[in-house]
Length: 303
Image (cartoon, rainbow, N blue to C red):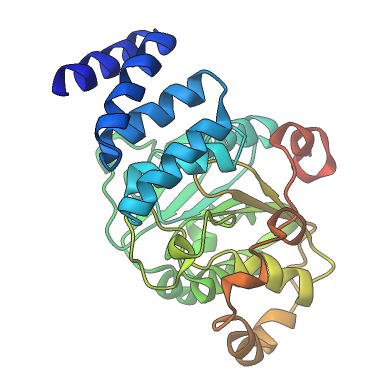
């Protein structure tokens, strides 16, 4: 058994997908509940463009372990057929060439470092994992929560007195935090600015819960799209199919709008308890899904 698995995975790594499929299928017949085999076999079927078979492998694995992160990653690749979000972010930066950049939730800096070293950029994270000594002179890391930082009024000076031109929200995976970040960023932006939001296209109910119960977790940020569509119909809101959990694009901003802050209590009461079933069977339409290529050619992501 181990020989079959090792050989099958080796063939997968060198690109012999047909050979890998033969060996891993045999191994899966002997051990139908082995997640490692099912994960590898799912990847093989993906490489062979056999999406239905890949999905069957991943779903079979989730039946064994509903919280398996690598299995959710596989399903996410099948679920969202676009470039991964970091690639999409890079293309958006290149397309828009923003004059300023703000990012909420920078983690290890992989997305923050996509900003041009020539522009003022602010990364906000209470526990950043980035080497700040390697940052360009005009890039600043704020070790604080976004709520505290935005309330402090320091952002304008950090951006050399310029308004927000491009922003990326990737902080807490909870609706109300994403909403407050959007409100603060829009207020500090100009009308033609762009705000991006990660984790807006959830994979399934389990990974979209407010409480994290799986390594793969998008939380309930998806509710922000529905909220903006209801309360701010003046905005242009789309979601890009970027694995693992989608990337929202919000344009046609109005920095003077007070609709959202004036309605916070009502919005919280309506949306925090909203159930995943609201979008489960109609995600593409309700979350305004369009391809990255179409978005880059449209007014959404062009100056």
